[in-house]
Length: 276
Image (cartoon, rainbow, N blue to C red; front, side, top):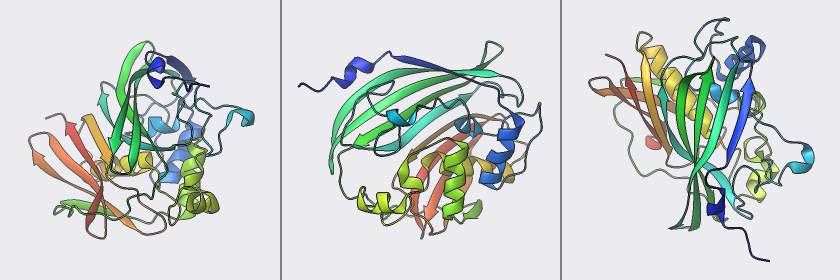
């Protein structure tokens, strides 16, 4: 039987509504060690990743804990899924307590050859609206890689930071973030699975959580800045429970470079732009 062509998924769409309920927001805050905003406040940067989640029944979940492939996302059997990066534009804040909608579209599907085998890159465009007004425009890159030993050691030295926060990724923290994002991916909470099936030495820290903590550290250091865009990419996974740092520096007018580092080398990089 011929495997389906992943390119056939280009143009597929999915919609999801969310009430942006304060009760759930309180749990997101606890998972990130952040202060809880109030009803009517702007949703903190990247917290929308804990919202607008379209779940599936148990009989539609794959062995890795994600929804089975071949639905909204392309079929990519026998490959391991990872967040590769993405780009966001913040047009206006999502407000807590006001219902919103996510419209997602498969924008691109590309097969590439990497140093560890074939890689399938899927780009998903998300549009988040409230009261019919576009608030966040996002492109998210997902990569499906053939099973191979993951790259764990960094090679790029971290720059000199102007601000930095230490993160202690305990199993409870990873479990809480999986829970509030309704993320069943077993690499974040199932140690026998992640070590035996996917070859990591321990639980993997969520890429979205790392990006969120980078933005949180920037906001803590610069509470007066109004962020307009954010782009990010992962260089290597971070494995719990080893501590890591989220840090950054201002590089030019209205721009900041952010990163996550461990043992002095980069693991994730990002660029953030803000209004003058």
